[in-house]
Length: 448
Ligand code: GCU
Ligand code: CA
Image (tube, rainbow, N blue to C red; front, side):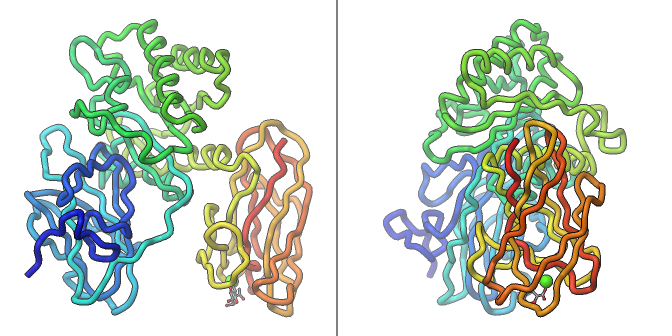
């Protein structure tokens, strides 16, 4: 008979909530050892497991999404008890699982708790590599994914994190303001520091450190009579208070898509910059969302969230890589990210499809326009040279030949000089013969 594991009984591999093979990203409440509660919009759990089936223990009716082996997320609605995630058993072997619970908000009040996994007899969970960087997105319904098809999962916060190969979470709830307005509004200036929107318990910021915090607030304050002066002083204090929790994070203050409190947001950023905090930036979002990217006057639809992601991900990539190194696994790779040939940096390399035009594209940020050197690390254990076009910001600038290397593990660096714009640049290697690209490990862009 299966009994819920107590914390003392939790052992790596057993699938109980306390199983250390399971990673919990975002603001989970682990107060109960038998049911861990998922809070805010973008929390998730991730684990590997063996066997052919996986079931998940729920307490009361709940809605959640699960993805097995990186396949599209499947939505489970109104389920409870032991829920079978594999109605069709999997092939025997190692698998991965990601679960996101729907946020309790508005009229939805499901029991967003995780009671552990039930695996095949003799099967175990497996620890997955934890992605080294964490992005945190702070906002309202736009950042919670309202009116997108799968809420938090189809939101720009989630998509951006996935695009960049980082961990990520959305500290967001529909209706949120920055200011805790007197007429009642989730005031993120206070709520952000809590374990959940409606909780009085403080979040323990020692649980994880975000590398980048993206703030998208102000859209709702307008409807709560928040004055510009109030907004600016709250935003300034909010930036300082986040900095107190995350001493080294880059903080990005987005211009709200509706253009609310623009000057006040910029002034708040300038205020903390002038006070010595240089790692806070205002991000102009003009033109990011087109009319067909909106589901209504305010909320992006799925296309809109992709449009935001296309703009935001390269900007964040630049801040994640102040050294100027861009791993191919975080770039766009027309092929697969592999790890079978050792000696690569990061978690893998781009094995491009062997075809003309099967490219790898990096997005690199530099502070000023002009000439810079780039170094691309590659391996090509075929006898033949693999030629490619180097395309910078959409313009073909030169041909590059990737010569043969002795083996697939004999990684070699080729240095080139290009002209870049201030801000984000796309740097694309597009093969011109049917052999495709060599395996590509990373691109170093000398900062300027
Ligand atoms: C081999 C090698 C791959 C490489 C491929 C190629 O399959 O293992 O890493 O990408 O050849 O020729 O492109
Ligand atoms: Ca290949």
